[in-house]
Structures are given as C-alpha cells and as structure tokens.
Image 1 (spheres, helix red, strand yellow):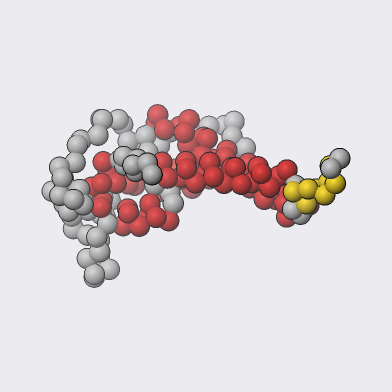
Image 2 (cartoon, one colour):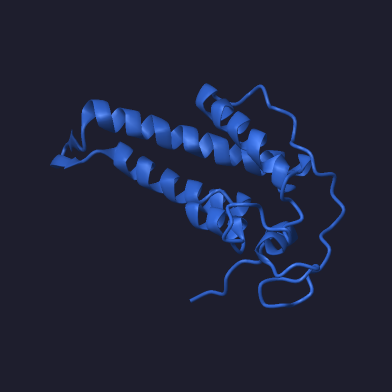
Length: 156
C-alpha cells in the first residue's frame, strides 16, 4: 500500500492542534507564497463544467485552497465531471446493454462513466472535495457548535 499523498499546509492547520502544529504535534512547514485567489473563469469549458467551476470557485477560496495556477487542474476536474455526467445521461436513456458483432454486450458508455468517475474522485481529493476530505477540513470539534478557536480560517 502506498503512503498517503502529502496534504496542503492549510489542510494540516485546520486539522491541527493550533499554534502552527499538525494533528501529530509537528510544526507545519510554510507553503510557497502563491497568491491565493481563484483562477480566471475559462470561456472554453462545456456548460456542465462551467457550472461545477462556479461552485468550486465559490467555496475553496474561503479556505485558502485555490490559487490562479490551479486553473488547468480545476479545468480537468470540471471537464471530467462533465464527461461523467454525459455518460450517466446516455446510460439513463439507452440502458446498460449494447449490441455489437458478438451479440449483447455491456454498453461502451459504462466504461466511460466508470473511468471518468474514478478520475473525478482522484482530482476531487487533490482539491479536498471528497466527503472524507471534508471531514478532515472540519478539524477537531469544540463540542459547542462554534468554530474551533485554533482554526486560523474560522470565521473568515
């Protein structure tokens, strides 16, 4: 089993113990000083991809997790989602079986759906967009329903 991928310093801070320490008490390295702002909205994405782009760019900047240079990776995330959505639409209209010279077979759009879903999940993890990543973002609970005082992003 491969070691887990390193996570962004801001994610470690949110999960951490406070005072610049991660959940294991280790000092968190300062990330490169990229300008933290969303990339410019591309015009060439498909409509479904643009919808996801807008949703992601509305949420991630509040956590300091998005920078201009992330644009190409975010474009891939959004277009991968659009491909998955199209494959789902075709499956819903045409079903799971197709026909070729061999007879009745699994429809080819199922492979597209599965592969794009797999790629999308991997890209989501890079941006902290999976349910498990969300729980890591939540950090330790104060038990009061109030934001954690050690969370440098609380209330921003």
